Length: 360
View 1 (cartoon, rainbow, N blue to C red):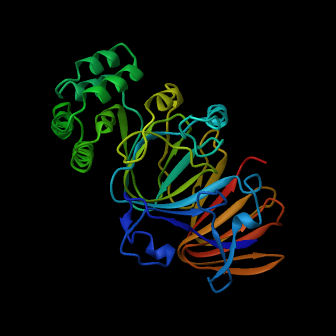
View 2: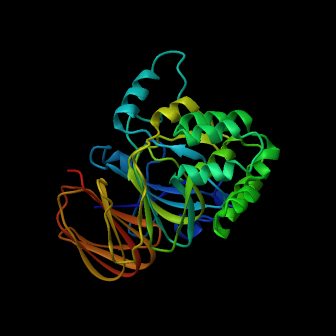
View 3: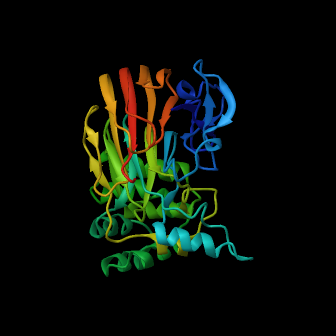
């Protein structure tokens, strides 16, 4: 069992000092994500019993086979990119292909990225496809979108995306909120589209957001996003659990490279996000997910051996006990327990996330 802190990411969509309670750092700059894992994009630093860095990283002790999951704390002040994650075969093939000279760098690694977000406060997101008739009703209220509307009505979302990216202008983007209201969407949805228009007035990808379903989560509720499902987190703080990958193919709402055809090739028409309206203490285990999560606030929980486990303290205090001894966690620190480690027990007085891999 090892103790780690998160590796901080200062992406521009983050909340200023939004992760300070867990990072222990006040930077006066956006703090977007804390990574707990071995991914080379941000391996977690090891800390001692006092929470001080040891100079080592988790990746110095385990590889991605032993640590198959990446856990994050996320703080979003504004919408993240409209994006999709590639499934396993596409990621592996794309990664291999881009090793050839002259190929664009689209894939961050050769692995599938499947993820779930658990809200730590009210959280808003676009996730999955909005019904085509609803999306067409919103887009019909915008100038120049006739081709996209026609594509939606014949069931061709890829052509609709291409058409929207071709006609998007700042004037068109500014009409998103009014078009959503005219189409009869809820006040929350209208406000979300107004946020997109205000924060991304010059981004062509803003016009893609009406294609996506709106999701609002209360604290403790979750949304599972399989690879292939389009999404864009809007605002809020949450816990993310995912396979150990950073493969993101973007369509808009970003200053990073956009790869439209690669994204279209990764999108799924069949898969949908799974919403879990749960409370703390409930087991969060989406269908076909490679992980299971439980958020507990008090009492003792047995952590069985045989699979990778990570226990991340969100608030309060907790201690982890095994035959190797006892570890006290502080908010923002996590106990990493390999599949070969024995049973452990966690005693919590606060909020702790217990994440376990289901793939052995």
